[in-house]
Image (cartoon, rainbow, N blue to C red):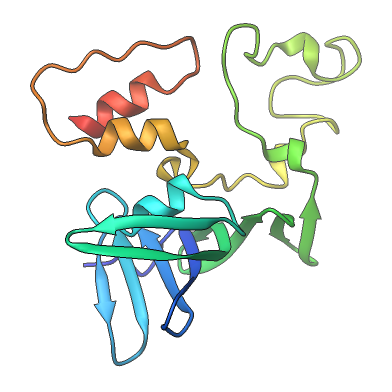
Length: 191
């Protein structure tokens, strides 16, 4: 069953020709309740979840789901963090918004950016005045402490990573990439 403490991590609003706009929630488990209009789909198995990974907000899409050709537009694409049943973070093209003690607050996009690769690792000397007056995770320059609720890792996959993870079993798969490119994430999810 869907975990009510953290039911989903992604939200899509889709417009398809001849249909009413619909909301699709992307999570770890599928729950479709037509009566209440709630559609949570498993990101690993539901074909519609591919739209979340392949298309940005405002993009037109054309996909084949089974035998059906589907065309439409992604009206909204959001990554959300829900913890203990409480919405704590929303990331969208319009910005990143976090719940703080005084209410919702907009964050700078760079404050919550996740990236890796050679030369990108956090170093103590990058925090505070020349490394003095603070360490990793402390001090006034560590903006992530206000946004300590990071998105579900599955919400951060790029289109290529998603394709490699969701590709049908094909025996031995070799994954090559530089540091921070997501090789371990892909391997773990494929297992």
